[in-house]
Image 1 (cartoon, chains in turn cyan, orange):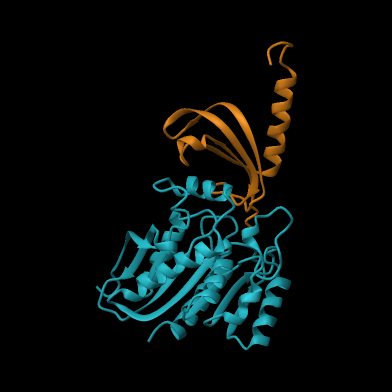
Image 2: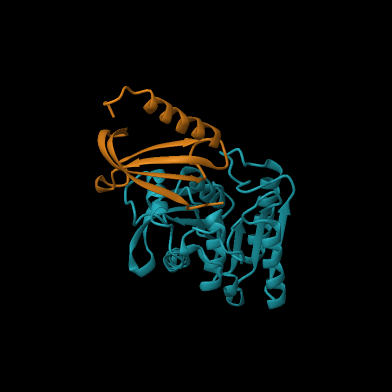
Length: 247
Length: 86
């Protein structure tokens, strides 16, 4: 069966050597396969994001999603864990980088790996995908509607969410950005500013902003889902990862 | 967006969660992405007892309109209580 895949929960070494839960989905076979670290959205390590990991496996990539809230709530349901992590101000940038780095190392060490690892993140994970790509040596990054990369968050938000556009000079790989024209965080002006900065720095990037779509247009279980934007977005992802993650 | 803006208060009372009744010590009130409600953002209330772990939580996710109506209903119910009971 050339379309067979395996998926399930494993333990990986994350930031600071912490053992954290992660969801691995990969094609069955010797490979070589490219790999993707999937960064879940703020609602957590949930079923829809596990489905996304399996989608990558079905398309020939090993995908690994670390549970970014594992430390706050080991064994708790994803929604309770998300509430606990949220109450503590979210995931610190340094810890995120360590967890994504641990996931990338796990993927590279798989026998079926071709040595190339990408990253993708949604919502808060969009900002974190950019952060990881500027902090780690990766091969391709996708930012799905991540806010607060260029603009500071509104007053009262946690200090963990400061702008990180200053890291753009360290972007280690091509970046694909997928955004909604109706989104306010990030608004098109913010993503245009990021594109300008990347152009000035000579960083390979490709941004698409969809009319009629707002935040979270990939989320099939939410009213924000926009089928046209999501379908085109997935096509862009397959093209992008096909160019940069397959050998 | 993920707002992270939160009003947190101490509360006394009980809530019924997935494992039955438990004592409540805190409530968090925030407007952010819901887990389940069919809206981009909702007014979320978590009734909590952090000492009992993350699963000691009773959660509701309400549209902004519903949340305002709830707040008014709470005030109205308390205002209608005979003197000396609260």
